Image 1 (cartoon, rainbow, N blue to C red):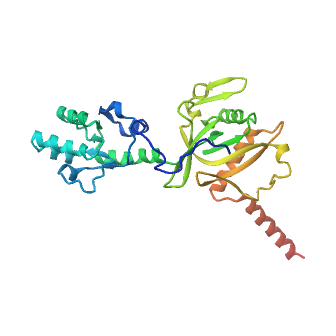
Image 2 (tube, rainbow, N blue to C red):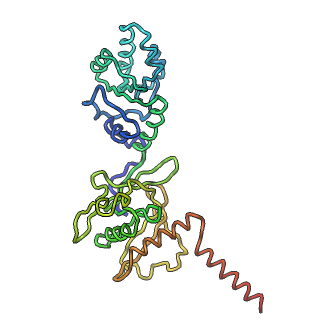
Image 3 (cartoon, helix red, strand yellow):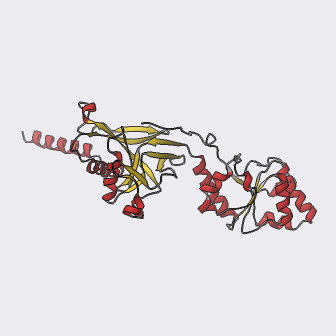
Length: 327
């Protein structure tokens, strides 16, 4: 399985405020008030913080690397102070290395607060969300940004409800197989290059397309096609859990190595997760679309707890026992 560069730990996956805004655009609905030109800075610690004690002047154990949230309590306290003292408290926050403040609950920074942030070279954002909602949603955004990631050369399709990635040498028919599956009602996730991220909490993998190629396919002899335009919006998926990897190999290259019964379960390891793996021989006249669809249906049964090889073995054993008892 060919891979591109991989990020395997949360702190290896460095990201900027611009990345945070981009990934959290729908979930967080943030607006930048100050510091648009500073969004290329890296976020030091992927968490949010309520700086209540810090605003009173107590900075022991202050989590300066996190995004600071000004909720109702923080705003009420600041507004209770004289203007000079209020600005001094906010300025002190930035002097202790805080680089970003988010006003929640629809609160807006005052002009003098904007000026203090500008002078400190900080970033100020606003959100209409309640503080607890923004904190909760931020955790999901940070989890996605921090997740171990890799990219695999292969095409991924949602088949029978599960994510199937098929790989193989160029010219093996990956895109053509994906096209056939889409015409049968299944959906494209990614063509040619699939981006994989790991959900650390559940130890599961999710595949998606790169932003630049999402929804597009390249078919030899036809060219580039927009799948949603041709087959409808339901023919494309943004992200899908990866539950099966299928490798296309030429029959002549693996003849004699094929497990015809399927007694030996195969797995391939991606980002430390073992994913069920099937090898499908490719030769003239073989219906790859039908074979991949059947492999996905078979995998769904296995996930549900069915073991066809075990069931057949048990049936044959019972028949043998009956035959022996009649002797």
